[in-house]
Image (cartoon, rainbow over all chains, first blue to last red; front, side, top):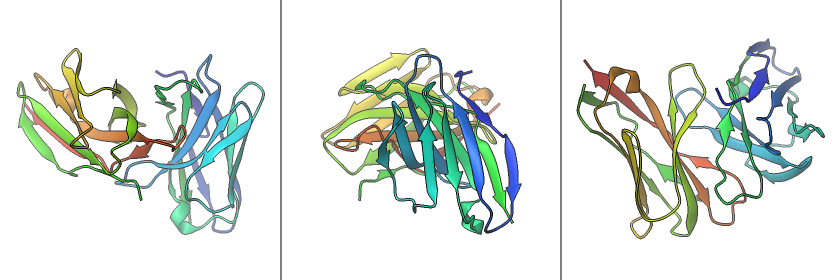
Length: 114
Length: 112
């Protein structure tokens, strides 16, 4: 167990709806990264939050947004859901500012868009 | 475009054998390299990190890094059926902040 938690575990939404996914980082970690993993593929970086500021973004449209709270937990929001947004959404916790960049994943949220 | 490539497999090895998993990446100036194990339906689990050329051993696992040739490999000695999973290679490319770029993963099957 990494100590990283995510909620909910599973979620079914309809195309066009909005969704919010939540992540609590490992104790002592101040950085949260979000990844999308489609079936049969490796995770793809969405964005990262370090000390409540966005600290990098991958190739995802603006309808993917997020924030980080003072306790370093984080939310991922996706607006105007599309069928292709169906995937496993992973949150990874790390100790920012360290050259090692080791990231520890939570259990993920499985999102299905119908 | 910075990329990480892995053979998708499946790589099938008998129990007790050495499993060798390989990964190549596109940018010579990369800093950090990671191997994750992902069981079906689960999230990735960090098993090894390596930052310098050469070998790094941790139990039955050995990571090997060759920056000049742009490859990183993972050896699993005395493979067990419980090692059957998808192994993901991840690279932190230079000037990419704290972002990890993953390969597509190699599925390993260890047969009893």
